[in-house]
Length: 571
Image (tube, rainbow, N blue to C red; front, side, top):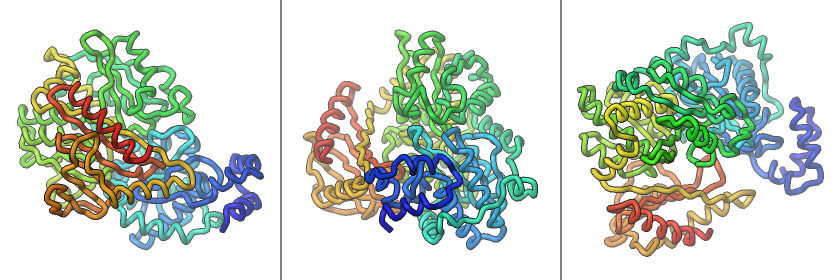
């Protein structure tokens, strides 16, 4: 059906969301605006749905939420007897409404719903799925995206985001649903009859108890008298993070006042992502006044953490996700080895775009490092593999460069609450021993070599965006670069064909990972580039790594590689 026909169907339908009616009226006659909202259905994949809030099939609204939930319900009913689903939501615009609409659809299909009665971090949803023995979970969140976005993430009974196979089957069901004819249960009626049940505080308490159990040196964090400035970036982390820090002995926590309360408009940080320095501006400003040992920032659904720490001149320095992950891995390995709690045959997991420094750290402590595709669900899957063999205790840590970390197996997604706690423990331990976080990082570089990383996103907006992204990836496969930044490409890994090619010998080896639209280049000087289209945004992301004897040398290499690769991509 053409975009204008769909627009007319929507305008003729008695919509029960006045915001949608007003929006449709406002774009009457605007061909481009109508086309953008109706030229496709919002894409459903392993990341669920993510899109701009608004009217149309290419938007997040009560109708696309209901349609997706009906598809999920059909899938669950076919797969399981008497399924149940846990639902959580964050501080974004209409997150609470979308959560209730999903609950109404599930209840109408005879599926028991466990719903958090207030906004909660994404890891709490992962925990509830397993704790309540649910067949699936739904988290209403767009993570760290700008305010105009919201999303719908689906979890399996293992607490991980659903697999590619499951996503395809759910999508098949979704495609058979008429979004204006989805059966709904009255919310209050379902609540009174017990078909929808609010998740109890006891579940929240058990989650925090599991987080606290990941402490390695409880006395260190109690005795260090840490002072922390914290910003939840107007999201879900405010209470859980402050609660866990209080429980482990971090009593002096100053919260950025403008970013303390939930606010889906994110007025003070248009991009509420701790990876973006501008999001931490208010926190850094407060640090100048409070002089804390540490700045912590969690994103709106509290599954990512960013930090800043003082240097020897008292200036606050941002620490990247690769650096924090490496610091935590070194700390966990060193301390668990020292106190005798390191398991036999320990395992750590990282994604293919995450620093190779982790491999050197792991090797030093006899830890097996497992590389997985980008996305924390693949780290969660590795925990599940170990659990199936009753070896989950072998897992000690997992992380990705995009500020996501997890210690423990109580959830199967990155967890900003446990990461905040462990970062404070690590900072407290080092403080008691007279060194700073930056001193500890320099010690790592002195031991294993300097690694510098940078990520670059190339936006491909609009109707032709996906086509352009596909053309870029196809072109690189047809004509792979011989050099990048003047450095010879010695190996190319194509995760879609599952082949690693040695460019000198033309020998090919098999990559034993699920197929994914990712290309990786290893250069002659130890530098590398990984390229992947985003699964949730109209972007292609490039991940650069450079090594050297000094930071200056590594930065120089990285700059040349990045400059040249940008030209290769045509941006």
